[in-house]
Every structure is written in C-alpha cells, then in structure tokens.
Length: 136
Image 1: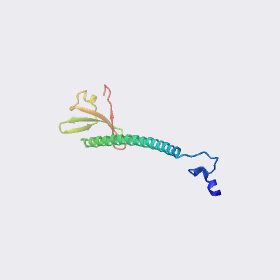
Image 2: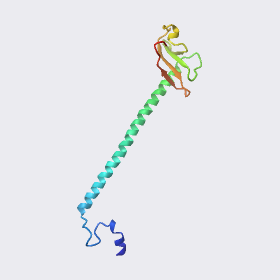
Image 3: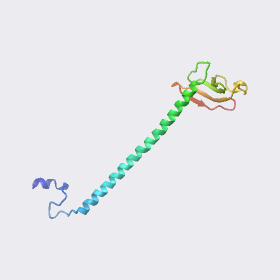
Image 4: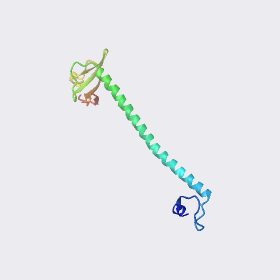
C-alpha cells in the first residue's frame, strides 16, 4: 500500500477518503482542453514553418530568374573581355544583342542601335543593371 500512496498524484482516483473526488467528466474536460491546447500550439508552429517555406520559395524563384537573365546576358555578343566592376552597355540590333564599352551619350546621344541597359559584371559573373542619368 505504501507504493501506491507514494505515487498517488498519477492515480485517476482518490487514495484517501479525504482526497477530492475525481470525476470522469472532469478528467474528460481536462483531456479535451489539453488536446485543444496542443492542437493550437502545433498549428501555430506549422503556420510559422509554412510562412518560411513560402518566403524561401519566393527567394528561390527570384534567384532562378536572375540566373536566367545572367545567362542570357552572357550570350550577348561582346568584342572585348568583360571585367568585374566594368560598366558595359547593351544594345540591340537585328542579329541579336551586343555589349559595347560606349554609352549612348558617347555616341553623341545617337547610338547606331537601340540602347537596352547598362550593366556591371560582378565577381561571381552575375550582372547588376545600372540606371543611367540624363548625361549618360
């Protein structure tokens, strides 16, 4: 009997006549509350993970789009060695796009082909588009 008394907190019934009565209804309510609490807690954690997954997917999509653009830019014709940090200008002509070291303003504002954008080549071989001012 001593073993039962030392472990009386885990019993589903009172061990003494003076102990409060434990009803099955009270026990069921306690289990229901615990179950709801656990469900809410788990739902909250899963919602945080779902938001992180959506953010990571968006970031991955942007990385892939940038990589596709960089690959296309590397396919443009170029008659010089592209160096990281160098400002280069992309023009379009019927045979395809090409890079030039000359800005539209260096052509006197009238380049031989339509100007598309200015870029710098990054050390990782990706491109960064550079907005041109009115003098460029």
